[in-house]
Amino acid sequence: MSVKLNPAAVIYARQLIQDGKIKNDQGHWGAHNPDSAAENKFLDQHEMAEYAQWHLGQDASHGEDTKGRYKFPYGDFKTVHRDGLIAAKERAAQQGYHDIEQAADELLQALEKKASA
Image (cartoon, rainbow, N blue to C red; front, side):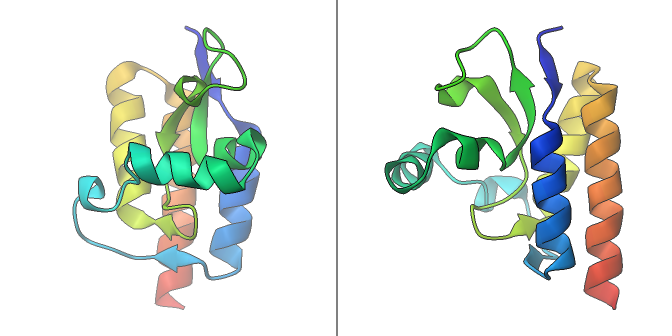
């Protein structure tokens, strides 16, 4: 499998959650997931490494400077979304990426704990 866990994204998401930059949304991730135009706008203003931090997986079969390398988004470039973590966890489980599934689950638990505090 060429898709692996992106440890930098996990660290970044943990920090965002700790800082309270979360959305404990109950909706569908499709309503919050940045579209291609939003991704391009973000990349116009930020480095690819910053873009990568918003994705729990990375696909080594794509170049480091391509959007296609980064999989399993969990936020909107400002906050970590509960429904984004749920979507990442479910898709990772379906596709057999257990390390990404586990990381998404741990982040989801941290977000829910922070939201209830």
